[in-house]
Length: 251
Image (cartoon, rainbow, N blue to C red; front, side, top):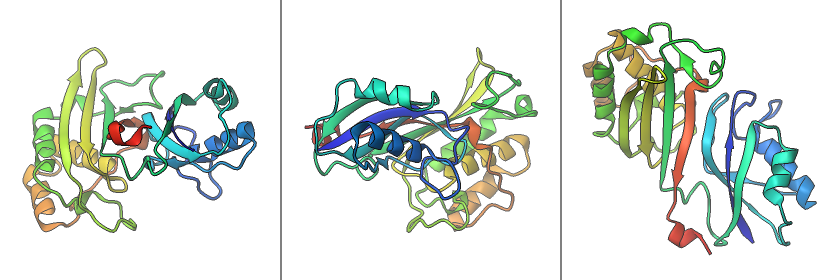
């Protein structure tokens, strides 16, 4: 039987989602928890691979298990795991369902704070010059993303991606007056390694006047890297929604 699980995690203490040598990853702790409670070696597949320090307010994983799941498994997992990793639900799906390959859309949000906070310094990026950023220019950059499919300028070097093609369906900067925070929202069918953090960095540089919207457009046209690129810190980034065709996936 194949199962999907919906989880969330705060990525501060972890090297990312994916298991890595000599570093603590979210996937590792979840596999250890499931294997211990189910008394079988359990391997899980995630819907994506978040980088070190990046969070997920919605994340799906799948695993296979032949026996019957014990009662109260979600609560048992939450008691077993660190408090910064939470299971919300576990449910059976079609045997061929795949959390990564069947995901139709993924959405991220980046939090950029105008003022420092001792309570949110691990979950939002405070930028000293945030109040001087031109949000209209930043939204000009965001609007460009809807017009292109090749995102070579926004992929980390040494990426193992076989294609740089992505379809961005939403990209916009909003201002939360209550939080005094800029929020960047982006949705696409897939993302390249480090893509969102490089896009946010380009928007920040454009909002400060360090680079022009025209230079970013030229990089997208020519599929080349930006003359000035900046990857913003990971702790302001959240994977916030993953969409599936549930009519096909659910039993």
